[in-house]
Image (cartoon, rainbow, N blue to C red):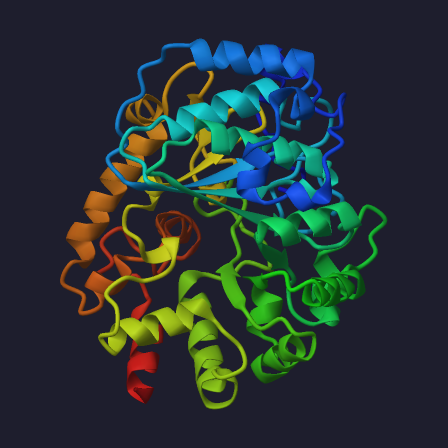
Length: 432
C-alpha cells in the first residue's frame, strides 16, 4: 500500500475557522520563560475573538473523571502538515484543517489539565512538522497551560522535529523555555537521504547537521530518533555510531519501523520491514559495540536504563516500550481534538477514541473499542509471558509491536512465552 493513510475526522470540526495567526503578539523575547509568559496580560497575547473563546471555555462545567494514573504523555499533533515526504511515514496529511485551531487548543488543554489525579503531564509537540507553525502558537499554548494547571501539577513540553528548516524565532523560543528537542535522523547520509527527503526529493542530512550545530551554539538540549528498518539493520553499526559522534548527536533512541497498519495478516509489509526478533538482533549487536567503545560518549537511554535495572540501581525502565500500561499513559491528540492511541497505531481499525470537545479523556477511553481490545491483549499477553525470566522488566514489550508481529511474523504466535527481548537482556547481563 503506497498511498498515504488518510487522517480521518480532521475536516469534521466546525470550530476550525479560528485562525490563531491573525494577531501576532509583540512580546519581548526576554519574556519567554514560563512564569513570565503566564504574566502576559490576556489582551497582549490573545485576539478579541480568542479571548471570547477562552472565557467561554473556562465557564463550561464539564465533569472530568480521574484517569487512574498520575502521569500522562500527550502527543500533541499541532499540525499534520509536513515539509518532508519520508518513505515510511504515515503521520503527515495535506489540505485544509490539518492545523489545530485555537478553540481546539483551549478545549484540549483544559480537558487534560482538569483530570483530577494527574500530577505529571508532558506535552510532546508533534506533527507533521510543528516548526511549520509560528512560535506564537506555542506561546499561547504555554500561556494556557500556566493559567489552567493546578499548583500541584508539573507540566513539561518537548518537541519532535525533522530539524530541516527551523527559524531564528523558533531557536529563541526553544532556548528560553529550555525545551528538549527530538531530531529525526536515520543514520549516515547514504541511508538517511534515501528516505528522509523534502518535497523535491532532496535528502536532508546536511540541513539537519547544520541545525544540530545551531542547537549546540545555543546550548539547546537535543537527541536523535532513528527508525530501524532493514537498511539500518544491515548497516555497519560501528560506522553508524561513528557518524553520530562526529556530528555531535550524543543522545540516541532507536525505534523499530512501523508497518502499514491497514495491512491484513499475510499481506507483505514491504522490503524495509523488520520483525521484532531482527530488531532485538540489531540492538544486541549495537549494545556490544556501544558498551566497549561509546558508552562514555554516546547516551543510549534504552541501554543505560536496562543496565541500571540489571545492576539493581533502579526498578523502572525509562521508556514507554516496557511500561506495561502505555495505552493508559500515552495518548495522541489530533488537530481537531480527537483522541487516539499512540501514533504507532495510525491506520488501525478503531484507532480514534473520540473527541475531547465532546467528552473527558477517561470517558473516551472507557467507550473505546481499541482501548478495550488493548486491555484484553495486555491480559492475554501477561498470562502467556508471565513465566519468562525477564517479564518483570520488559512486560512483553510494545503492544503495537506484538500486534504487527502476529500479522507479519509466522514465528510470533498468540501463545508466545517470550516477546523476544530476552536476546538483548541476555546480551546486556552477559557483560555486567
